[in-house]
Amino acid sequence: MHRKILLASSIALFIFSGCSSKQYYTPEETYNTSSSNMGDRIVHYSRDGATLASGDILTKIERVHLKVQKGFHFINNTKTVALTADNYGKCYVIGKQGVVDTIQFPQALLAGTITGKFLVYLLQNNSFGVYDLQKKSIIYSSKAQKAYAIDTRVANPLKIDDLVVIPTLDGKLTILNLKTLKVSKEMYVSTQSYLNNIIFLGRLNNTLIASTQNKVLSISNKGKKELSMGISEVIVNDNREIYIFAKDGRILKVDESLSIQSEKKFKFAHFSVATVYKNRVYALDKQGYLIVSNDSFSKYRVYKVEEVEGKSFISNGKLYYNQQIIDLNTLTYK
Image 1 (cartoon, rainbow, N blue to C red):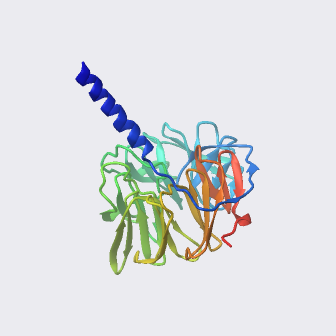
Image 2 (image 1 turned 90 degrees about the vertical axis):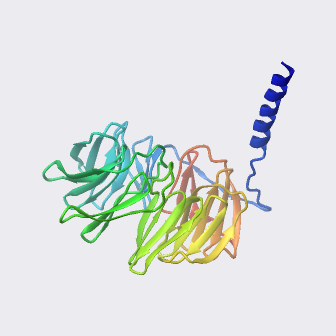
Image 3 (image 1 turned 180 degrees about the vertical axis):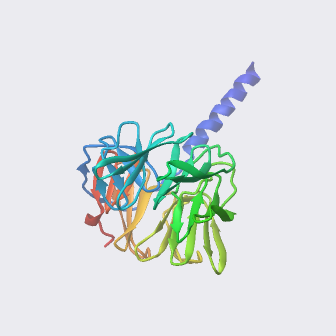
């Protein structure tokens, strides 16, 4: 009995010492900032948008009064229509006058991109394909390997000329020719067993940039380059620059070949959301520290805000979190 008590005590000590050893970002100096009440809350967020309880949506560039139906959430949009979905395979294509198309998939839609008459889709069971909006039928379908856990920021398919790059939940990129409906190429960004879906997919000039939580991949006619690290976020700004927000508290500015141009480490910072806006870098630590830096990290300020309690999103220079809005235009690194 005495040995069992000692063993239990040892286990308890190990657990509590492990929890207490977690370290947090503690800046030497902080500044105060103001916020306004959101009058709403984020109920769902994805790579390219957030759905609010009111039914409005936040895209990267604006707040849209779409009035998404209850149980549905925003997936993606074009200049003329938006794509929403529920958890049971049903999705709506919504225009200015309301629902213009209804689609029922066998699984929940996680990502989708409308290009012309096609909806290129990715489902919860890691099956993907092309739905013809005119014929109202699936004209191409395939299925990737089973994914056991995913980051909810699932990247949407990316159209490049006659090709579409489909990011799957197991860390793979499938490049499909939309004219022939034949796969041109397949490649893995990373091969981790969990949380390995593509969380960022973008194009920088003639270079394709893709990222999972574990690796960033750059693909061009010069070949492939990669950076392996724990990744919270990847941003390509309006100046066609790439920023990587790492899980170890680093922020890196890299070029198309992923060569590091500059970097700054904020020790023990855990980034909840980040962006690059008007030549300024913004990163929100989960403990409630909002870092504002110039784009070379030579100057920065840290603002103390509320600890992050739920989902957060940045839209058109405004940070939405904890039912509050912070206008990033009012903050400076000087």
